[in-house]
Structure formats: C-alpha cells, structure tokens
Image (cartoon, rainbow, N blue to C red; front, side, top):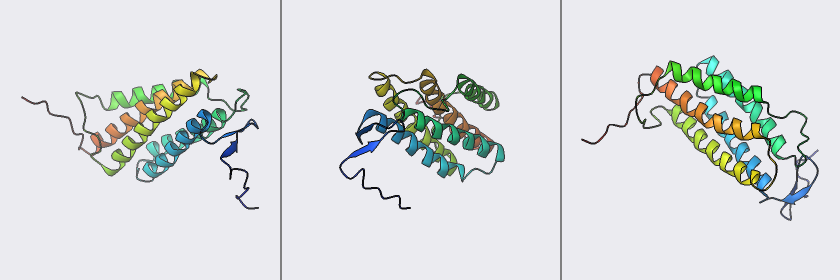
Length: 177
C-alpha cells in the first residue's frame, strides 16, 4: 500500500474525526506544529546520554502523538485525551529539575549541542502553544492540551539548563556595569 493517496492534491486533508479541511486550517496548523516539535525532540533525544532524561523525552513524544490526534479531532471524542494527571506529572518533573538546577539569573542558551537542540524544541513548543491558543479562541480545545504544551516549554528549558549545569557550562548573562 502506498502512502500516496492523491486526496490532498487540491489542498485539503482529513481530520481524525473524518472532516475534510483545508491544509491551512487552524487545527492542521496546531497539530502540524506539534508534529514539528516531536521531530526536533527526536533529534535532541539522540544526543542525550543519560537514560533517565532520554526516557523522559520519549514519554513526552508519546503524549505529543496523542495530542496531535486530539487536536485533529473536531468533536472532542478522541479515545486517549491528554489528562490532568499527565499535566501534573510534567509539572512535577519541571519542579524536580528546578530543585536540581536552581537558576540565579538570565541564561544564555545553547552551551552544548544537546541543550541548543532542546532550546530549539522549547521555542517550537511556544509556537505550538500560540497556534493552539489561536485554535482555542475559535473552537473548543480541552484545557489539558493548553496546560501540557505550556508546561512543556518550561520542562525543555529546565532540562537544557540541567544538562548544561551537569557539564559545568551553564552560561549566565553578565549584567553590564
């Protein structure tokens, strides 16, 4: 079976819930940006040597996959929605990273190849959040999606800083005197 269907040749695609929409539809933009984030996380994940951090990113990717499905479902009837428990777990992971790596000022990102990749992921997560907010202002979006994507940028930021701190290369912005 080929992946070529020709159904999208005129600029439309099918949502998970069956509706045909233009490829620049707000839902398509939102889940497309989450898909972009997922692929960049794949890139960053492959630079991680700590198995715990690798696993955390893999768990995030599994949730992002479900988030894309949920965003592609217009009737809020997706079989595996993002849960409040998953938002809470990610919140706790951010807090654990903050305890491990307390920050003392503004940081210049990207002191390591892996942290630079995670910072790219963070900015894509923020763009995905903006796309999801735009969608949520027009159509119903479960609040857990907004909460998770908001927390995810914090997680990616803190994971990048933790990796830099562990390598001894956390780079603070020095104030002008």
